[in-house]
Image (tube, rainbow, N blue to C red; front, top):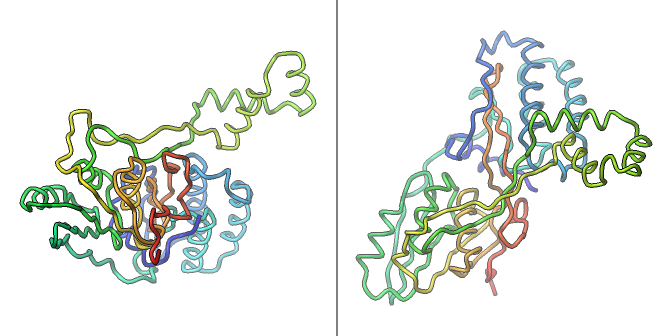
Length: 337
């Protein structure tokens, strides 16, 4: 998985438009008086929340607990507040996910302020209705509906999301419902799945030696699958998978003719979810470049240092199993073909 480019990550941070769960609130003491205890507290809070919700631990080349131990030493040795914020950014960036990042207090940020993208626009010529949507921060379904109803003789609808920075997937789905009837799916998703009692049972089982565990298997006390599941629970890689769901059985599309969806490397986050709705339902031809490859549901953590962490909590792939996080959704027709 590739991390966000700085401009994109800051846009997401400023917008706060992804569907999020606030997982903690450490309060904000005077930043000038930030001490070692506050720094260690914040690092520990981020490590703990990530351990509970991050869905891609099985893809990392390192152990998250060992990474925490490594950065704990760095935080203890850090000389000033600015360097501490750099360490926090580095720590979360090591998870290598575009929706997982550290957002320092405003006075320590190195990015330009977010400016809202241009409003939706359209053109209609020779039966081709082209609608450009640059964000899903707001609901544009009424705008699109009006265009479909007011223009006669539409032979092709072309949705241009090449510069769409994302926003709220729900708003994208409301636009998609104008073109896809009934209820529909876009992605397979997964989250960490275990109960406290499951974790307790797994920890008790794995407290025994490997030799003892193999003896349990030989004697029929546990199975290989049960042992493997216990190890997944302890390593936080025991995931619950499901398909997302949009629309409704009563929904009827108001346009069912030919469609194209234009995408690029600037098609990000909720815009990728939107593209996935059309790809997974074979409702439109995707044309252009691979999308950015970063979407998710970040968990927000307010920290004592005045900064904030966001950690993705849901894993994504297309319905057909194709991975696109860190790779992008590959269009049906690549630019230049």
